[in-house]
Image 1: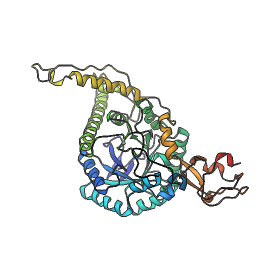
Image 2: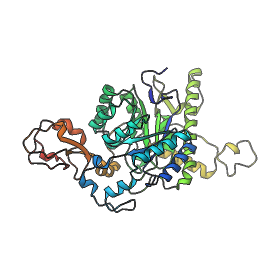
Image 3: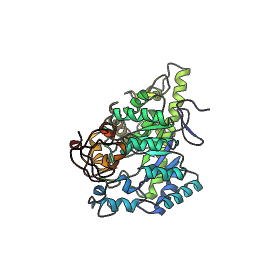
Length: 429
């Protein structure tokens, strides 16, 4: 039986503190525009232990205005001379998506995708995906959230590039329209500097939104932070392997090696969850537990870990684990010990502060993919703006932010605006 704050992400998969972490392998557009590579990634994700594979679906003319599509794009990650050509090369057709969905179903792994616009919401809804994902670039795109919510499917919403006020508004909207949703802490930087990850936002979200499940969508290098997020109570985790034209890829390993890396990540996550569950039980049965694992987690009344304490960690060190003596086998070599210390120090940085705001490293992504208000038709000056006059797209130049839609309704333009042109803040009074 499900409780009030359980998140049913897919038939048979209930996300709560009593069940294992739901792990999403975000393939995104790392398939290089090749459906065979996409299938290899599905295979690798399944072999590694992921619960779900996820892609991204866009209708390019709905997501971008013409100026953004015509933007020159000739960097090392480009698949075309313009950004529109680049995105078109990487965009699978609906028939391709159906083929991949069937392939995933046949090998026994859940298939879904992020919907980048209302047309894509319809495509994925017609495909009967188990849940809809809304990416960070559309967290403040309230018309898209509203439209997706009308499909009455579970929704997973990332919150990169947003502040707490916007996330609160998303929560309020979703509770009214479709209460079966989850929020993911996310920093939209590729890769994100460890000191800007702010894992403490997970605790902030659990405090602000105690009746929903909180997850984590990571863009950091390595696996340590994602494991820490699970230990902090993130119940669904997105493992991303995506570059999409940024300065460098999140993971540069060849596809044939990704299975091993993901498998290690999922194994460590399982161990972390088992340790947490076991030690909480021991703490209940024996108040003066000596386990250092139990002391890592300080729990609240809901049983979630609410912080990482700075504790003492002691590990044996040896020059050779095969030497005689009972301690050698459980000891660390100098290389392993150094790696442990490095990860501890990295984790201390990654915890950050419980402050939800746009991080400096997210500015590139925001300027490239942040949504703005554009004219849905030719708009004359002096006529009060109505909701049907406006669309929300990735646009050049950047105009009024997507979250300002309701605040400009009823206001007028100082000068005419052509269809598909950005609505600039200094043109609205």
